[in-house]
Amino acid sequence: MNNALVWGSSGSIGQAILSKLNDEGWKTVGVNRGVSNSPQNAKHVFENKLIDPLHFEETVYLISQVIGQIGFMCYAAGDISFGKVAELAPQDWQRMMSANLNGVFYAIHYSLPLLNENAHIFIIGAVSERLRLPGLAGYAASKAGLEAFVETLGKEERKKRITLVRPGAVATPFWEKGPLSLPKDAASTEKVADKIYAAYLSGHKGKLDLV
Image 1 (cartoon, rainbow, N blue to C red):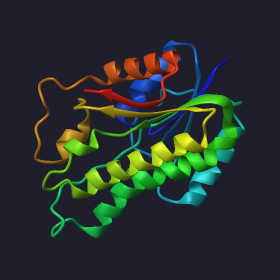
Image 2: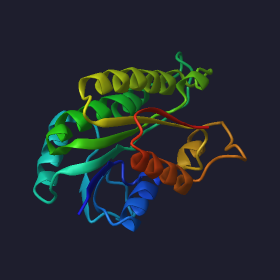
Image 3: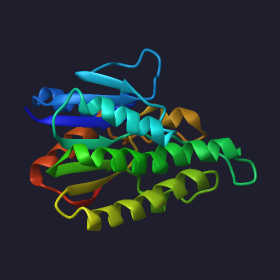
Image 4: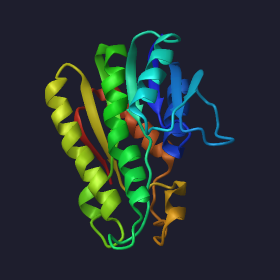
């Protein structure tokens, strides 16, 4: 049986990806941030606040006890806060960096030994060049840094397929956290999951723009 690991399984995109993988017959493991009443749609679910590197190491060890080599991994966690640089609280900046950038490094760093030689790693990014707007400095910076990280990772792990997913507007609760309105043409999370799985089947590498 194929094994898959999704970080951020309590989020809307993470849930959609897990549902797609379940439908395709994968054995799934989800890591969520302990959101109350979040759907548990993975065979095994672990909690991780995505802040402490030691907790990442512990979580990966626990995962290794319930699943074999992993062929599909997705980091779908993320966070956003709106606020101009003069107004944004340092803890909000740090929370975004923890979820959107630092967490990616920790998750991949500790998970690599569990991934099979030809594993496909998906990382949910954003069309970062469109985010450089007043009030989005922290979010834009974290997503731009993520692009540099993923590009470099791809050069280090050449045998693995690594895809940075750059969705446009997606209908998720993110839009409820700030002053921006959800665009009428926003994609559903199911559509995003379908395109990610199609990229897996096609052997995609590099940036995957879903705009």
